[in-house]
Image (cartoon, rainbow, N blue to C red):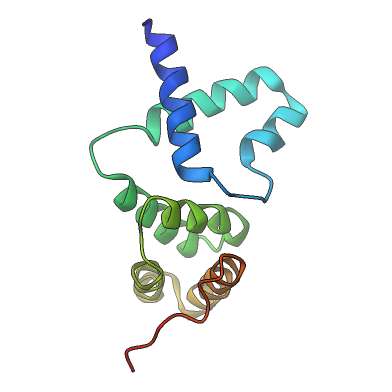
Length: 134
């Protein structure tokens, strides 16, 4: 297998792992509607090289993405990564805790927006309301 074939295979596997069952428009589809070649290059790099790295496990990688997107108030992209986090085995409670932790650094409004996005994703997946230990 050539290096390029290896990256293509990693891209396919990682995209399937993260984005299976996602009905919203995926970034690759948006990019492809404007520039097919660039979309492929971006996908091979982001999904096939960055997301496929084995330095940290996929659940950790997705919780990092959730924290960063929460802090940046990028709720549209956050929705995609909340779904990916669930796909790789993060629990709703873990995801909510990461979002709550961002309040210290990003502020309560960013946390509230992210929690609303999480609630929407959980509702769509039939996981809302979350079980409560209170």
